[in-house]
Length: 152
Image 1 (cartoon, one colour):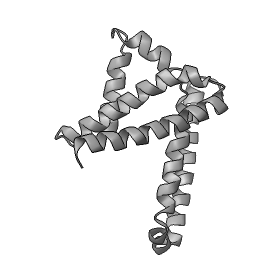
Image 2 (cartoon, helix red, strand yellow):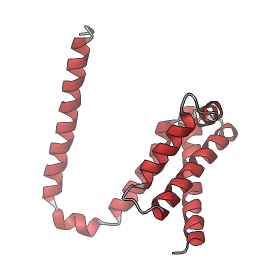
Image 3 (cartoon, helix red, strand yellow):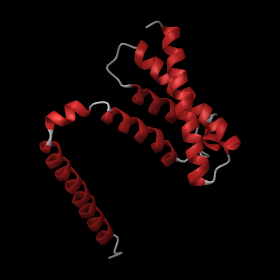
Image 4 (cartoon, one colour):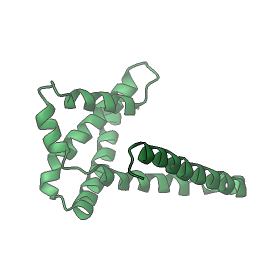
């Protein structure tokens, strides 16, 4: 795939995800749609640049690592872009970004139902152990921290 085709396809995908996020942000967190657009454009730009860097730089780094680095540099306290960057991106709730991510995960799983049928009951057993392990692990960490703080 050529670079221009990659950029166009990536930009289309990021705009769709951005629209879904803005709608989720407006519905779930009472954020204005118009006020959220500049922050979402910044997030889309970071996503596009990070995906391009992951494609063009011959390192084994995922695009997510590039996105974190770019956002971190833009938000550093001594960065001249910090105030502007945080003013606009703070209007986008982090949890509003979960809606398109979970929708994508659901579509991805549903497209692989044949593979899941082959795994069958073993997947359910592993999932139950993962869920219980995560829940009890989190509960134990919370218990220790709350006791150290003297809250309980």
